[in-house]
Image (tube, rainbow, N blue to C red; front, side, top):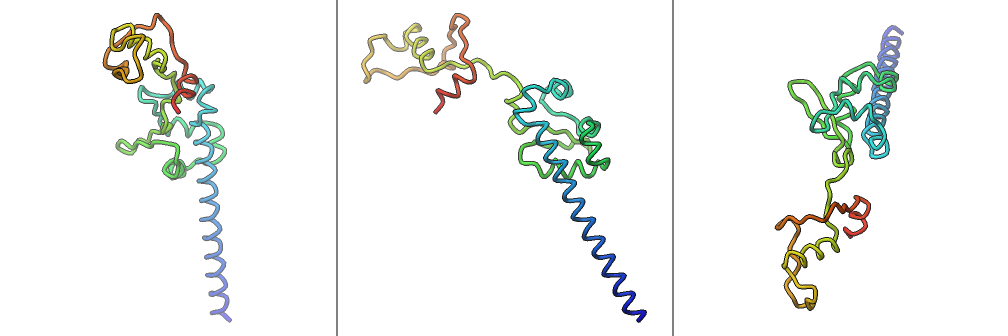
Length: 168
């Protein structure tokens, strides 16, 4: 009977350890989802506080994120935060001497895109700089890219939305 009690106790300990491991996984995934949300396009478009914590390369120290109330409600373990960000598909993780930083993998969503030239603007620029003539036939030389010869558009800017529509 003593052997049976030891076996039952070992089984109970194994079940407890397995339950703790599952709980840790659930907690890690909850933290990952929360941090992924912080760095989502939806949140970053309006979260001035998080943006204020970013360095020049758009990284935020993981120690800063650890201070966020929702993160503190999910975990107080820094190791859980590290595990969570390493699981993320939307974050870049930087580890410099044990100091972790994270940023959105698509850092371009954080800031306004630089002005771009749309197709019509490029054609107009090419005509004005003499690359092609206004009456060019379809067989005429192609429009040169705006990057090969800078052109002023008189302050006109194409929005990111216009650029996205024209990029397909």
